[in-house]
Image (tube, one colour):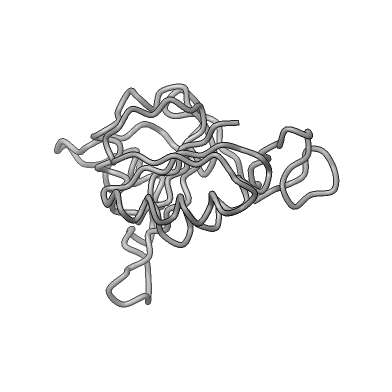
Amino acid sequence: MNVTIIGSGNMARGIGSRLVAGGNSIRILDRDKEKANVLAGELRAQDGAEVTTGSFGDTIESDVVVLAVPYDAVESIAEQYGSGLSGKVVIDITNPVDWASFDGLVTPPDSSAAEESTGSSPKQRSSRHSTLRLPARSSVGRWPDSRSTCSSPPTIPTRSGKSPGSSRPGGYGL
C-alpha cells in the first residue's frame, strides 16, 4: 500500500516505521525538504523500504494520507489540498494541545477539534459571521465524502494480509 505522510517529526517517524515494517511504501511531504530527506533516509535503512519525499504542496497520489502535523497546521493543509483529499482515507493524529503552556486545549470547553475544523461547534452554529468550513473529518475517515467516524485504531494490512505488530489478520498495526 502507498501512504503519504504530511510532516516529518516524531509522530511521522513512529508511524512511518510501522508502515515500512509492514512492507508499505511511503512518501513524506514537509515544508522543510531537508527534514523530510533525513527521515526518509532513516526509514529506508529499515529493510531497504521504499520511501520518497516531496515538498508541502506537491500532488498527493496515494489513497491514504496521514496528517502528522500540529493541530493549527490542518487549516493550511485543507486550504492547500482542498479537493485533492476528496475520497482519500485521511488519518488525522493532530492534538489541539496548547503548546505554549501544555495545560489545556486550544478548543473551547464545549467543543472539539473536529467540531472546530468543520464549523460545527456550538459557538459557530449560533454565529452568523463567516468562518472557514473544513470538510467533515474524524480520526480515520474519507475526506470529505465520509460522514462516518471511527473510534478504534486503523487496520493497515501488509502484503501478507496481517497488520504490523499483529499475529492475526486484521489486527491493529499502529
